[in-house]
Image (cartoon, rainbow over all chains, first blue to last red; front, side, top):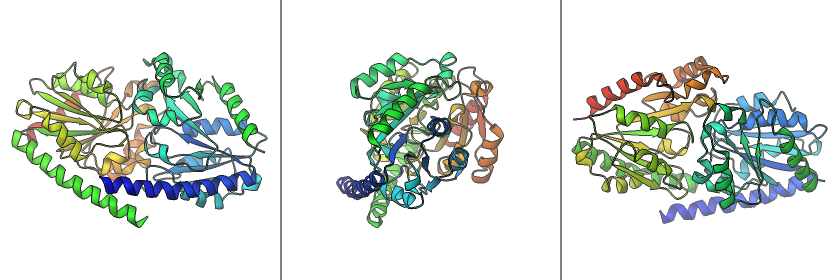
Length: 219
Length: 219
């Protein structure tokens, strides 16, 4: 077990060096990078499909991580001309090195925002800094109201938390207050925004948070 | 990167030895072990809440894996007197060694079925044999119909696949046929059972599969 822990540390050290280099490149190009994390099926791609057109005139680019397929990239190609799919092969998270490879294939000078849609997973991506400027964690209503308590590291590391698919609150049992209480114990700095990409509810609040963040960090 | 791959192999070798020992102990006690895998929030606990009472008079035991909390074990304590929570402390899957520790705390001679509810994750648990006799993979309707193509290893390794929360098929866009087509490419031996623990639809089919499996493998 000891050996395993040491190696994970090695991997994280290498990752951190690459993450810092990514951040330097992004800063130089004046691009704000947002790392989007959640379980599979929480609505990361649907969120970006609605967010990118709403951020106009800011040009957005996307790196999409998946174990297999390019389905998410194909969906996002409809809203941005600059989208690169990264297939991790079986890896359960994106690494900063993989993001560095992806960055080479993007024209950063033509972008002001980079969304990194991470592999759908509530555990593995948390420890891997990709060089992002802010981290967004999604939790969808169908996943259940116990997930903040069960996966605290993910929600602890986030700068904003989006409760998605709130249109399903009327058909599913879900205690939003429980989520708020669990969050209050582990992360008091990140706001919780309730939204539905289907009805559009909460999108204004999310776009306001994002714009402040982009204009605050960016050039 | 090379070093990392070698160590993962070491971990899997150690795991496999422990898994074989678990299987030997379970066989000796005449207990059939079922490893239940899925993303977070696909309804693993809800499934066991409905399944265990329906399997009577067969006495069931449960090992529940989670990063944190004992919420699932607390829910399952209502339907079985033998339930043990294993907190992985951040680990994204159960290991055979953790299951071995759990087995010591159960009275196997009083059981005929052991359900192992794995950590909610579509990647990490796949490579770890826990000593089970059969593997069940859940996919819930709200996660989306693209998940078999995106996480083939999980569905490839399963002996039966449950499409859960089918009561939501009326309110969500979900192509069951796409899931069937994707499955046909990677796993032709495992049946796909559509079910809803809320309405009870499909439970008969699942219980029939399970009973055959238990009585076929068991004593």
